[in-house]
Amino acid sequence: MSVTIPAWEDGTLRPVEKLEVHRRGLRHKAVSVFVLRDGAVLLQQRARSKYHTPGLWANTCCTHPHWDEDPATCAARRLSEELGIEGLTLAHRDVVEYRADVGGGLTEHEVVDLFTAEAPADLPLSPAPDEVEATAWMPLDALMRDVEARPDLYTPWLRIYLAEHSTRIFPAHLLA
Image (cartoon, rainbow, N blue to C red; front, top):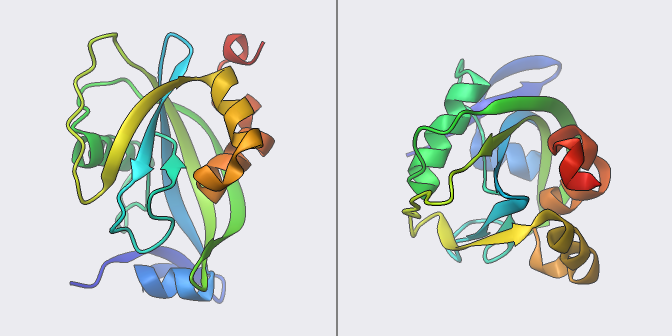
């Protein structure tokens, strides 16, 4: 089954087949979520079966909205589908745009609605194996140091978010 996502072609937003969007490097809508707990970020290692950036570590979840899907609805849907996370209060942090080569002749050129959510200590996780290889909680300061020291372990978008947009994503007290 072909999946379409909202992408701009010749200046017009329309549904375009997802793989075609990435092959052509079209600018498209996306959502990214960072679930936080006591200064740590919930990371996911992308499943080895993913068609780009398999096995790399990313923020809690990233996705593309369905046509006419509200970004917050999309974020909550994907938290549930990818990680079995339900009921967190999502805070919209900002909208950013980036472009990155993700390998295999594919490009992400995303206009991203960024969300954070605070998690309780006992947050249950139920990762979908076709989406998520593993999960880990990492203190934000340690994550930033590790991404700098070992960038090849992390997705291009996570590296961009941390290097260029951290003050737009994270509460100030986590960056102090």
